Image: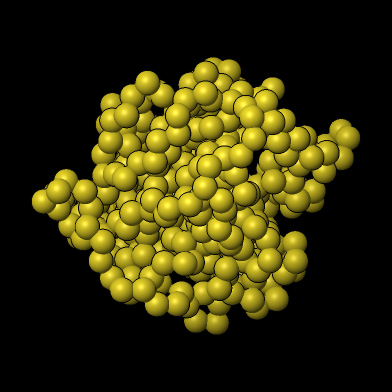
Length: 357
């Protein structure tokens, strides 16, 4: 089943309030200041029926990778190597944490919109080569989060990954519990680089060279067989489990999770923030837009993203609460997409979150 929004897609300059499509409320980043990449065209092309057919065909092609009788959401777990050094909305609330060093004040520029800072230079870690996971559409509407020590920006993580074959990559992620970091399956299990990655350094709220909450190295991950065995984009989700002595989420807090219905998602204004490889090294960038289409397992939108933002959260902000509704993983010439937190995904994530406290 596929639904396509007929609403006008409105680019958002400043975290938007997670009201339904009728609303255009906004809340901006509170600051004064592994995928391949590509640049897409401006407006989404084709008629509404043609778009619907594209979205549906994409999902069906990915679903065809799952062998008959396999449950793509069956859990698969892996370990790396220690470095030498549905139709019913379900909600699991988050927590703002208790940061010892992060202030809670909101800072805004005179114009009410975040000001940009930090001059660009090449990222220190490469993107996933070759595959088109992220796309910027027309004008780049991303906004830098200058103060990553405030909530929810401090829950967004930079992932520095060493693959099984020694190659190094960058992804994004989000704290969803004291020790649990949500990301993509392709960030923890790389089919072209030896399978389960060697290790991942998780850095919440990284801002250039600054790591205000420190970091932790993990060698333990969970994904599902729909990704690890079948490499289906419909099942491209995972968690990184932090060591028991590195409960970074208790300091940063974490966003909640939500399994939302088709009608709740269609046209919803959503937020995304992560660590793209085309921006200054280690800087976090935010964008917002409306959900363009909803399928059984995926969301499609025209949020601007780039390589390195794989695994970043797509969330709704409503009544002061943030709930992740999808995890970003794909790009294309007329849309970018993410894995919906449908019932099996939601259940796995809540289970992993509760398992590692």
